[in-house]
Image (cartoon, rainbow, N blue to C red; front, side, top):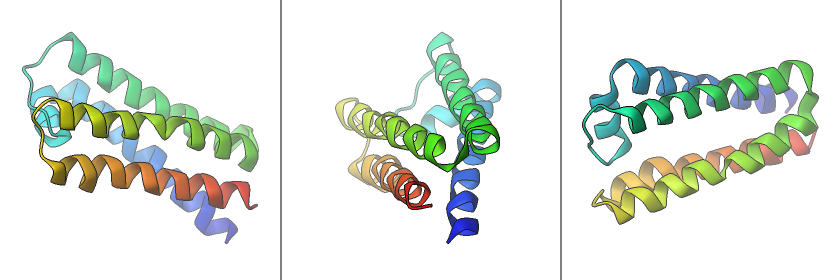
Length: 119
């Protein structure tokens, strides 16, 4: 279980880093993939920096803080995809994107937290 718990956390951290970089380099396509198309601008850059930072902090905690610190981090950052779910729904995005991408991500991050807490 230990390799799977750490592996899932690493994959989630790398994935959010990818999303952050995409919002910084290709903001309009990234926004469309997020579920609420928007023109390039400061707010899309903010999302990119936020996501990139979350991923880097997650990797740093895995490397230097251990399973418990990483688990608490995962538990807390679950708020981001839950908030993204609400944002997509309140701004004309589809339920499929809101629940199929953002809510599913929140559930996956919670599973990662639970696995890390179990170590």
